[in-house]
Image 1 (cartoon, rainbow, N blue to C red):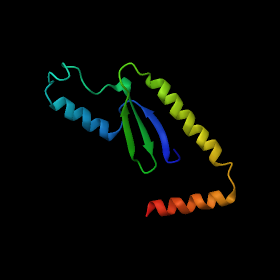
Image 2: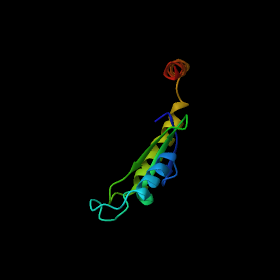
Image 3: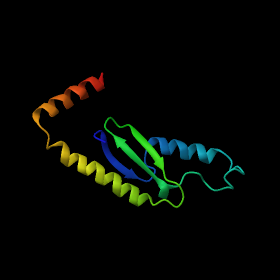
Image 4: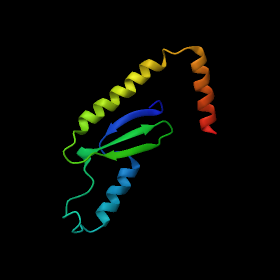
Length: 102
């Protein structure tokens, strides 16, 4: 949670763009009955520090906006809580981040 930079709705990442191009090249198979697999209204991405992303799509009938609201609330609460820690915890966090980068 701490490494999430932002949460973005839609299909605005490079991976989604590549998937859309691949989908356009393929002929519509009988497996999906001619319905495009990628749906902008069901998609969202978690953008992490370092420009990495986790691109996701929710199932039909699932409310993407509710999921986005909950995820944004968690990230926001984490941001508020992380500044309320002691110096020892901050030192350990910086050490952990340095080790994680190597």
